[in-house]
Length: 551
Image 1 (tube, rainbow, N blue to C red):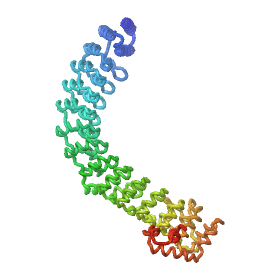
Image 2: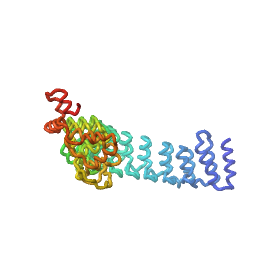
Image 3: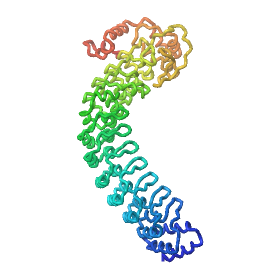
């Protein structure tokens, strides 16, 4: 019945152009598994002289449709009528053979090859039928294409070959077929990646071992200088790392960025791989790279890896090289700085207990912790002798920068003062009781700090709009840690602005009590770094509390 209707429709189409009837042919080819009339319809069309070589808007012929939908009988009819179109391409440069391979119609592939289809013709992406067969992991189709002279070493538009494709799919059988057919062992794609590199990258041990056994270079480098070992470490393939090292892969071969395999393994937190690499990595080579694995582990919060590296005696005070440090606006240099910036107290504690100095960076980690308001981190750093009187070299002030960062955190300010922060410098003003010049424009630096000019004074900072309403409590706290001082006219102006602050102004008027002066003298003689030991002195509890400002 279907064939009768189809033939009647074809007769009707005699008065119109062929493209109007083409969809019927395509439909017949698609529906033929359910309706057995497509072959008969095509036969009749050929007999009546229909033109079966016109393209649709995608450049497809009936031959492409037949190949795509696996209609071998239709292929036979079409090729017998028009053998010259066997290698015709679609708008995407796909031949009938290419489409049959992609659709995995083996009988159609065989038919086309036997009738002379060229297996070397590529599509617009320069992918060959062989490449697509490897992509589909169709072993029988690969063998058939190779038997008809498929180009085994053809590169696609990105430089990949059939061997690359078989390797990333870990298909040993296809790899063997390709090698026997003359596949090159180490072709490179546009990124300089070889099949062995791809095997290391994807973690395919069997194929990797096969390539190495056949002589592939385990120390080849991609365009960015990465080696197969580096790539295996990057992706956490421990088994591959072990295999490559057993085959003499060089763990000290850097990328163009100067990084070693141990760097990337530390960054990704693969501590077992890091433990293995420690045995074969040169620490002098690490130093020459300008960055320690400790930096990367701390930066990316890989605490377990950090612990492994510390136990292996990597230098906890190693500094970033100048060019690596310059990448960061704050010019950070130590692993400790990364830990503090991340508010990672556990990592900071590990580094400090292993001997990391908290005073090596241009912008002291203590200032970072104070700025973040992280009390636990501040305490940790101070306990390990962070300089509570630190200043910023690039933006000098006449008082400790740590005071500037905790003006809105009075509890932190008191803690710093308890531990030796220089309160006296906050009351030193070049203008004294004279009228102060008008406020100058305040600018923000790269760290978000407010400054007026180099050597800025405490009274200027506390006069900024965001701080001035805190002036009274701040001055009150500072007065507890100084002797006889004379407030400058600007500080007096602030204290006079609120009636409730009158008692603070009165507190500042000399002379200070003898108790206060004695306490300051004792604390001065004890020294900044021993203030915490006051509690251990054989003194009455009330006296210890008084010396510690806990009365």
